[in-house]
Image (cartoon, rainbow, N blue to C red; front, side, top):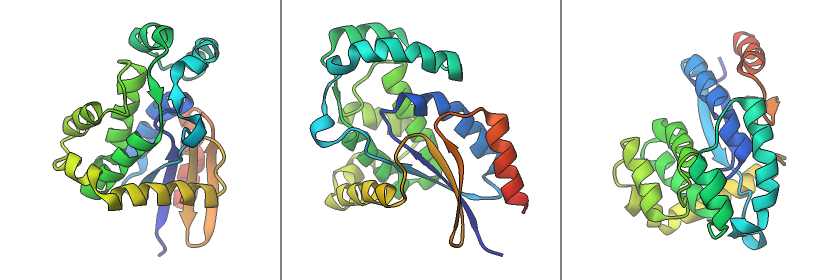
Length: 209
């Protein structure tokens, strides 16, 4: 029997991914014994897009209530007021994605929890997730040992860039995206946010087929 894989493609800075994270956690818990899970980082904010959040503050102040109303998550006051009003926090997907790569190497079973922790650090507590200190604290909170040494390896950096290229080659153009793979077959279970019941119904039917 061929192996079935569920691949969650996200970006650490993606607000809709933060909104989708409770659905993904519930789905992961419900299916992890029947499918192998992988989490990929897509590289949403790289190159010329890297810069202070102040450039997006007004847009985010208008967009975040819609994310909250649709998904039920809540962005913390430390982010919605302090970070957005100050406007100096630099957004870059590279560092938190590289950190996720390090965790996947060291403790792949904790990668989902780490990714969720990074998004909470940013969107609930208003922390700088490009900071080694913040990323190290999240890694420690999910009991990952040797994080900083692995993060700093050139090989980890190169694997992070390879993952960005892989996501592009897969044709993923937005986050979050949930895919299912079996041999050469690929199913799209969600593009953007979707409620748990709807996604689980589709995934469960696929797993039972």
